[in-house]
Image (tube, rainbow, N blue to C red):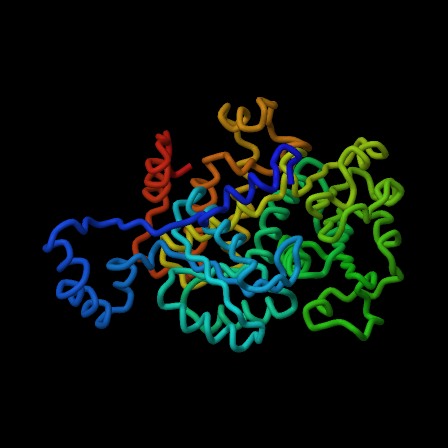
Length: 427
């Protein structure tokens, strides 16, 4: 935690919880009461019984996400259990609301059996417009998400996997542009084969990557290993690399999802020209930027921290992805929707940065380049760019229930909600 914040101040902040329910319709008179509850409430019930899609019109389903966890893989804390994970899930609900005006309920399930957890989520699904799975350990998280995507009709996303994949893919897209590298010929090293590492590897493959060396706690994932689950086995290579030191030689990119201090200066020095290094261990990365730059002046680097350039922060993803998905009543979050989110972030980083964003980061100059590959979380335009890209991708991929979606009108509405006026809502 930052040195300027004390434990006592943090606990005081969380006192009483961080979220509450707000009533959106008047309930001050007998007439209001009869509308809100019995007998008036029977009318929308009858309409929804006849046409289930009307739940999006007559209830809060269209703007409601469930943040669901069993507390088995809480970032930095491990398997602390469902109840102890509640402050994190409440925090996720806060971010949904503050960044994208999406209402979210945190739901902590005291259930470690994957099939039972799936059954619970399926039973809860009618309440919500989407499900954000959070802090569920691998490999169970893959199985749970896959089943729920197949067996529910609302968007389901395990953010620990896909959030990191989307943000780093955006950074990679822009790094490729700046270096002129071809992703197909790159050697990409991923150290950390958990939920995020495997999801990142899959997304880089969709981008065109063909040579990904992945490492877990036992070293390089290669064809000769007999201890691999089905998810890791997808990345097994025929290679002589066995250690991180081996893998880093000639590597064009390193994605670190492991632990502090794992990468040495010597490893960085052995990388290919113009290397890309995302060291995302928190709070201390695999190698600090100043250490890496001491041996390479051609490196492009990001971390998970706000006090260094190119912060990879999942808040750039999930609120806006669900905003776009909810607004077209999507039945799923597809690979195309995730890639559209990444491309929108990459494109936004090339736009001139508003002064209010620079002021939020101490007045530093922010412009597209090696130290600005990824937009900042407090850039309000992320909502406009990313949500509209995701919504359009959902329509294009045939998973949107909403008929007659108008991209330009939607962007205009989002801008108006933010107090912005667009010269060309279609641009």
